Length: 238
Ligand code: C5P
Image (cartoon, rainbow, N blue to C red; front, top):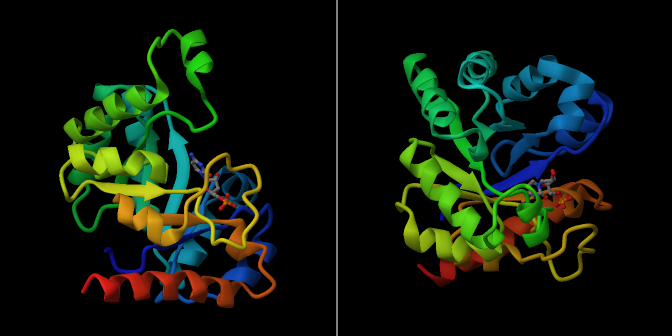
Protein backbone atom coordinates (compact mmCIF):
# COMPACT_ATOMS: atom_id res chain seq x y z
CA UNK A 1 0.00 0.00 0.00
CA UNK A 2 1.26 3.50 -0.86
CA UNK A 3 2.24 5.90 1.92
CA UNK A 4 -0.45 8.51 2.69
CA UNK A 5 -3.04 7.31 0.14
CA UNK A 6 -5.95 9.65 0.94
CA UNK A 7 -6.35 12.64 -1.39
CA UNK A 8 -8.88 15.14 -0.03
CA UNK A 9 -10.88 16.77 -2.85
CA UNK A 10 -11.10 20.52 -2.17
CA UNK A 11 -14.37 21.03 -4.01
CA UNK A 12 -14.95 24.65 -2.98
CA UNK A 13 -15.37 27.92 -4.84
CA UNK A 14 -13.33 30.18 -2.60
CA UNK A 15 -9.87 30.28 -1.10
CA UNK A 16 -11.35 31.09 2.33
CA UNK A 17 -13.38 27.87 2.41
CA UNK A 18 -10.53 25.77 1.07
CA UNK A 19 -7.91 27.19 3.41
CA UNK A 20 -10.08 27.01 6.51
CA UNK A 21 -10.35 23.26 5.88
CA UNK A 22 -6.69 22.88 4.95
CA UNK A 23 -5.69 24.67 8.18
CA UNK A 24 -7.16 21.70 10.04
CA UNK A 25 -5.32 19.06 7.99
CA UNK A 26 -1.69 18.01 7.86
CA UNK A 27 0.48 16.98 4.90
CA UNK A 28 1.58 13.99 6.95
CA UNK A 29 -1.87 12.39 6.79
CA UNK A 30 -3.39 13.43 3.46
CA UNK A 31 -2.78 14.91 0.04
CA UNK A 32 -5.05 17.47 -1.63
CA UNK A 33 -6.90 17.70 -4.92
CA UNK A 34 -7.67 21.00 -6.64
CA UNK A 35 -10.25 20.65 -9.38
CA UNK A 36 -11.81 22.92 -11.99
CA UNK A 37 -14.12 24.74 -9.54
CA UNK A 38 -11.48 25.85 -7.08
CA UNK A 39 -8.88 26.49 -9.78
CA UNK A 40 -11.34 28.61 -11.77
CA UNK A 41 -12.13 30.61 -8.64
CA UNK A 42 -8.63 31.03 -7.20
CA UNK A 43 -6.10 30.12 -9.87
CA UNK A 44 -2.44 29.23 -9.45
CA UNK A 45 -1.89 31.40 -6.38
CA UNK A 46 -3.97 29.07 -4.22
CA UNK A 47 -2.13 26.05 -5.61
CA UNK A 48 1.15 27.73 -4.66
CA UNK A 49 -0.12 28.35 -1.14
CA UNK A 50 -0.98 24.67 -0.73
CA UNK A 51 2.38 23.58 -2.11
CA UNK A 52 4.12 26.07 0.22
CA UNK A 53 2.35 24.38 3.12
CA UNK A 54 4.08 21.17 2.02
CA UNK A 55 0.99 19.41 0.74
CA UNK A 56 1.19 17.09 -2.25
CA UNK A 57 -1.29 18.66 -4.67
CA UNK A 58 -3.12 16.77 -7.40
CA UNK A 59 -4.17 19.37 -9.98
CA UNK A 60 -7.28 17.78 -11.50
CA UNK A 61 -7.79 19.89 -14.63
CA UNK A 62 -8.12 16.97 -17.08
CA UNK A 63 -6.27 18.61 -19.97
CA UNK A 64 -7.50 17.65 -23.43
CA UNK A 65 -6.13 19.55 -26.43
CA UNK A 66 -3.60 19.29 -29.24
CA UNK A 67 -0.20 17.95 -28.12
CA UNK A 68 1.59 21.32 -28.27
CA UNK A 69 -1.03 23.10 -26.17
CA UNK A 70 -1.17 20.39 -23.50
CA UNK A 71 2.62 20.22 -23.26
CA UNK A 72 2.92 23.97 -22.88
CA UNK A 73 0.27 23.98 -20.15
CA UNK A 74 2.09 21.17 -18.35
CA UNK A 75 5.32 23.16 -18.30
CA UNK A 76 3.47 25.86 -16.36
CA UNK A 77 1.85 23.32 -14.06
CA UNK A 78 5.18 21.66 -13.29
CA UNK A 79 6.53 25.05 -12.29
CA UNK A 80 3.79 25.31 -9.65
CA UNK A 81 5.31 22.32 -7.92
CA UNK A 82 2.24 20.09 -8.03
CA UNK A 83 2.62 16.40 -7.23
CA UNK A 84 0.14 15.01 -9.77
CA UNK A 85 -1.70 16.27 -12.86
CA UNK A 86 -4.07 14.58 -15.30
CA UNK A 87 -4.87 14.58 -19.01
CA UNK A 88 -7.59 12.88 -21.07
CA UNK A 89 -6.45 9.64 -22.67
CA UNK A 90 -8.86 10.35 -25.54
CA UNK A 91 -6.49 13.18 -26.53
CA UNK A 92 -4.52 10.33 -28.13
CA UNK A 93 -1.10 8.73 -28.08
CA UNK A 94 0.79 11.69 -29.55
CA UNK A 95 -0.63 14.10 -26.99
CA UNK A 96 0.09 11.76 -24.08
CA UNK A 97 3.62 10.81 -25.07
CA UNK A 98 4.57 14.42 -25.80
CA UNK A 99 3.16 15.36 -22.40
CA UNK A 100 5.35 12.78 -20.70
CA UNK A 101 8.43 13.82 -22.72
CA UNK A 102 7.86 17.46 -21.87
CA UNK A 103 7.71 16.75 -18.15
CA UNK A 104 10.82 14.56 -18.37
CA UNK A 105 12.70 17.30 -20.20
CA UNK A 106 12.20 19.75 -17.35
CA UNK A 107 14.53 17.86 -15.03
CA UNK A 108 14.14 17.80 -11.26
CA UNK A 109 11.12 16.26 -9.60
CA UNK A 110 8.32 16.19 -12.14
CA UNK A 111 4.60 15.81 -11.36
CA UNK A 112 3.11 12.36 -11.76
CA UNK A 113 1.08 12.27 -14.98
CA UNK A 114 -2.15 10.28 -14.92
CA UNK A 115 -4.80 9.67 -17.55
CA UNK A 116 -8.57 10.02 -17.48
CA UNK A 117 -10.09 7.13 -19.44
CA UNK A 118 -13.91 7.14 -19.74
CA UNK A 119 -15.75 9.66 -17.58
CA UNK A 120 -17.84 7.72 -15.06
CA UNK A 121 -20.84 9.80 -16.09
CA UNK A 122 -20.81 8.13 -19.54
CA UNK A 123 -22.69 4.89 -20.14
CA UNK A 124 -22.94 2.49 -23.10
CA UNK A 125 -25.39 4.73 -24.97
CA UNK A 126 -23.34 7.87 -24.47
CA UNK A 127 -20.28 6.12 -25.90
CA UNK A 128 -22.32 4.89 -28.84
CA UNK A 129 -23.48 8.45 -29.57
CA UNK A 130 -19.82 9.43 -29.57
CA UNK A 131 -19.00 6.71 -32.09
CA UNK A 132 -17.50 4.13 -29.72
CA UNK A 133 -19.57 0.98 -29.98
CA UNK A 134 -18.16 -1.03 -27.07
CA UNK A 135 -18.86 -1.40 -23.36
CA UNK A 136 -17.46 1.43 -21.21
CA UNK A 137 -15.42 -1.11 -19.20
CA UNK A 138 -13.72 -2.33 -22.39
CA UNK A 139 -12.98 1.25 -23.47
CA UNK A 140 -11.50 1.92 -20.02
CA UNK A 141 -9.17 -1.07 -20.46
CA UNK A 142 -8.11 0.06 -23.94
CA UNK A 143 -7.43 3.61 -22.87
CA UNK A 144 -5.60 2.54 -19.71
CA UNK A 145 -3.31 0.33 -21.85
CA UNK A 146 -2.72 3.29 -24.15
CA UNK A 147 -1.84 5.46 -21.15
CA UNK A 148 0.73 2.89 -20.02
CA UNK A 149 2.20 2.66 -23.54
CA UNK A 150 2.47 6.45 -23.68
CA UNK A 151 4.53 6.42 -20.48
CA UNK A 152 1.90 7.85 -18.15
CA UNK A 153 2.27 7.02 -14.46
CA UNK A 154 -1.28 5.83 -13.95
CA UNK A 155 -4.98 6.43 -14.49
CA UNK A 156 -7.99 7.66 -12.58
CA UNK A 157 -10.44 4.76 -12.29
CA UNK A 158 -13.29 3.50 -10.16
CA UNK A 159 -12.67 0.79 -7.58
CA UNK A 160 -14.88 -1.45 -9.74
CA UNK A 161 -12.37 -1.12 -12.59
CA UNK A 162 -9.29 -1.33 -10.40
CA UNK A 163 -9.16 -5.11 -9.99
CA UNK A 164 -9.09 -5.80 -13.72
CA UNK A 165 -6.67 -2.95 -14.48
CA UNK A 166 -4.34 -4.01 -11.67
CA UNK A 167 -4.09 -7.49 -13.18
CA UNK A 168 -3.28 -6.15 -16.66
CA UNK A 169 -0.98 -3.21 -16.02
CA UNK A 170 2.51 -2.93 -14.56
CA UNK A 171 2.70 -2.98 -10.74
CA UNK A 172 4.16 0.53 -10.66
CA UNK A 173 1.29 1.96 -12.75
CA UNK A 174 -0.81 3.83 -10.20
CA UNK A 175 -4.58 3.73 -9.89
CA UNK A 176 -6.27 6.81 -8.46
CA UNK A 177 -9.82 6.14 -7.29
CA UNK A 178 -12.72 8.44 -6.38
CA UNK A 179 -16.16 7.31 -5.15
CA UNK A 180 -14.94 6.26 -1.69
CA UNK A 181 -17.28 6.11 1.29
CA UNK A 182 -17.44 4.73 4.83
CA UNK A 183 -20.61 2.75 5.63
CA UNK A 184 -22.18 5.79 7.36
CA UNK A 185 -21.51 8.21 4.46
CA UNK A 186 -24.16 9.32 1.98
CA UNK A 187 -23.22 8.33 -1.56
CA UNK A 188 -24.48 11.67 -2.94
CA UNK A 189 -24.35 11.67 -6.73
CA UNK A 190 -21.85 8.79 -6.91
CA UNK A 191 -23.60 5.80 -8.52
CA UNK A 192 -21.37 3.06 -7.06
CA UNK A 193 -19.27 3.60 -3.99
CA UNK A 194 -16.61 1.49 -2.29
CA UNK A 195 -15.09 1.46 1.17
CA UNK A 196 -11.46 2.56 1.48
CA UNK A 197 -10.17 -0.91 2.33
CA UNK A 198 -12.22 -2.49 -0.45
CA UNK A 199 -10.71 -0.08 -2.99
CA UNK A 200 -7.15 -0.80 -1.84
CA UNK A 201 -7.88 -4.54 -1.91
CA UNK A 202 -9.03 -4.12 -5.51
CA UNK A 203 -5.66 -2.59 -6.37
CA UNK A 204 -6.19 1.17 -6.04
CA UNK A 205 -3.15 3.15 -4.86
CA UNK A 206 -4.64 6.54 -4.03
CA UNK A 207 -8.18 7.29 -2.86
CA UNK A 208 -9.89 10.59 -3.67
CA UNK A 209 -12.33 11.51 -0.90
CA UNK A 210 -14.42 14.68 -1.02
CA UNK A 211 -17.65 15.22 0.86
CA UNK A 212 -17.20 12.50 3.53
CA UNK A 213 -14.28 14.63 4.80
CA UNK A 214 -14.99 18.17 3.57
CA UNK A 215 -18.61 18.19 4.79
CA UNK A 216 -17.98 16.24 8.01
CA UNK A 217 -18.72 17.90 11.34
CA UNK A 218 -15.06 17.31 12.14
CA UNK A 219 -12.99 16.87 8.96
CA UNK A 220 -9.82 15.89 10.86
CA UNK A 221 -11.72 13.14 12.69
CA UNK A 222 -13.28 11.88 9.48
CA UNK A 223 -9.84 11.79 7.82
CA UNK A 224 -8.47 9.99 10.86
CA UNK A 225 -11.16 7.32 10.50
CA UNK A 226 -10.22 6.70 6.87
CA UNK A 227 -6.54 6.51 7.78
CA UNK A 228 -7.17 4.21 10.75
CA UNK A 229 -9.18 1.82 8.58
CA UNK A 230 -6.31 1.71 6.08
CA UNK A 231 -3.66 1.34 8.80
CA UNK A 232 -5.66 -1.56 10.30
CA UNK A 233 -5.79 -3.21 6.88
CA UNK A 234 -2.05 -2.68 6.27
CA UNK A 235 -1.30 -4.33 9.64
CA UNK A 236 -3.60 -7.26 8.90
CA UNK A 237 -1.72 -8.09 5.69
CA UNK A 238 1.66 -7.56 7.37
O1 C5P B 1 -17.40 14.21 -2.70
P1 C5P B 1 -16.85 13.03 -3.42
O2 C5P B 1 -16.06 12.08 -2.51
O3 C5P B 1 -17.88 12.28 -4.22
O4 C5P B 1 -15.79 13.66 -4.43
C1 C5P B 1 -15.08 12.91 -5.37
C2 C5P B 1 -14.12 13.77 -6.13
O5 C5P B 1 -13.57 12.96 -7.17
C3 C5P B 1 -14.74 14.99 -6.81
O6 C5P B 1 -13.74 16.01 -6.82
C4 C5P B 1 -15.02 14.51 -8.21
O7 C5P B 1 -14.97 15.55 -9.16
C5 C5P B 1 -13.85 13.53 -8.45
N1 C5P B 1 -14.13 12.50 -9.44
C6 C5P B 1 -15.18 11.62 -9.34
N2 C5P B 1 -15.38 10.67 -10.31
C7 C5P B 1 -14.56 10.59 -11.37
C8 C5P B 1 -13.48 11.48 -11.48
C9 C5P B 1 -13.31 12.44 -10.48
O8 C5P B 1 -15.92 11.65 -8.37
N3 C5P B 1 -14.75 9.65 -12.26
